[in-house]
Image (cartoon, rainbow, N blue to C red):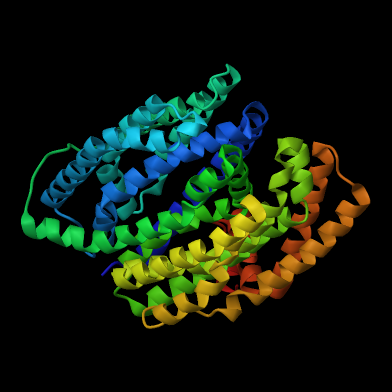
Length: 493
């Protein structure tokens, strides 16, 4: 059994690394997004989303969940297990590429009215096959919680994608900017990944091991396919019904509305491998899960509170007036993602326990409800009708709790009421500032954002005893680390 102290130390180091990575990436992402939003048109973003839809589908049907199966195993996999996993991945990816080449012709024909270039799709197929060599070395790093190395790889991938995309967009290459940006970032990522996590690919097959890997991965992968189906409403139904510009607006709304979830990616990334490692220690498992949900809700409600009161001003001043039609849908995304602080940890806990069937059933229900409510809403209200899809999580969340209660114990209200009160107080304060200031410059928008950060921090610090304890502990460690006073102070916190 893994020592609790070792797991906690590894988790803390990994979390800090991922937070630093996420902060760096999102700061640069915001800068790059503003430039791209001003250079490119909604139609360009729409075409990229449609091509990306094709690539995501290939990835989902090809991965087989084998990487996740390696991470979930209680014991360290043998070298032969990695070789068998690599063989399965190559078979799946190569087979998908063989089918994707003629499939791309059909896909381009379906979207022929939108001037979809077939060579863009072929370039993405090449990038897709290169990603097959990423699965094993990345899974080895995730399994051992070595997120420092993984963060270096992914940060360099992201920077190379954004730099290449912005430069080519500035030179007037339109959608091709995204295509070549993705290809270059994939090559950069592979070189760095094999440097930091050396792995010699080799082919080997053993029926029992392959069956075990596929058994866990199959249910998980099918659930991911259902989740993909849920998110495919925009590049499929909306594209055919309303055109590429509508897809561009809806994807822009989702991207801006999802900004509050970005700080959570550091925590979300660690949930599955961490909970998998402690799945046999029920007491530690339950406490860790509830701590994750507590922190996730505090962060998510806080970042949402900062943006909620200034959405129209941020869109107009930062991204440009041409994106103002997206404002209503952004509000829908903001409210629809508030439950991620619960759903992501619960799903990760279910997967860590090896309960793929529960994950599959809840994912299927969520996809079904999303399509049922979204289609009539889009017909009636245009792409703003997608708001119904994002808010449908309010309907499926109780079902998730009922189905998962046998495997996870979560304190729902205890983790909700404090962040919710802080969010409400922050929104009222921020709206008073916005109504008085009428922000029309970047500096005035930043002032309004600041008046979202301060009230939330004050309220959550006042209401949450654990936050006060964490804050004081962190200050003591920073100011007095290593001194006798610091050690005595920590003992009394």
